[in-house]
Length: 157
Image 1: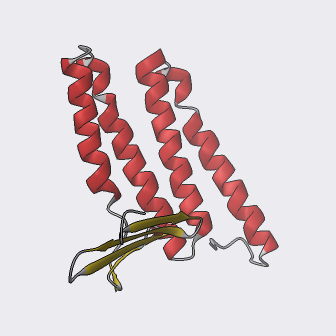
Image 2 (image 1 turned 180 degrees about the horizontal axis):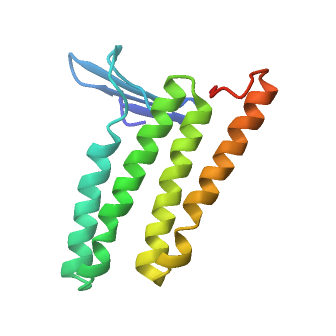
């Protein structure tokens, strides 16, 4: 709390109220990442608008201060994966397709893990096995969920 300005952070989201002499602005971010400014709903929290400038700043600091230009570029790979994870999760939750959101996030993590194992430890050859194994597990999961939902092998979400 700072005068009439205050911030509330809770399990249900974040609420920021900024008051000036004849003007007051309220920004709310709920648990799903939806943003409301003065009662007007925005698309979602601008995750990318915050992440990418921070990524660029961190890359420049790593390069100029610590001379870590080569490993520093991996920040951009990580930021790309985080952006995809965030968008997949928020869109899946917003559309009520939790299983689809979890699957999308899982595949992003699988690809990220494969790239990490390949670049950092040169494990390209055995690493490719994660893709058929993950596909097999995804098929089994869909079959089991379809069975319990009463479907007959259809692709239900």
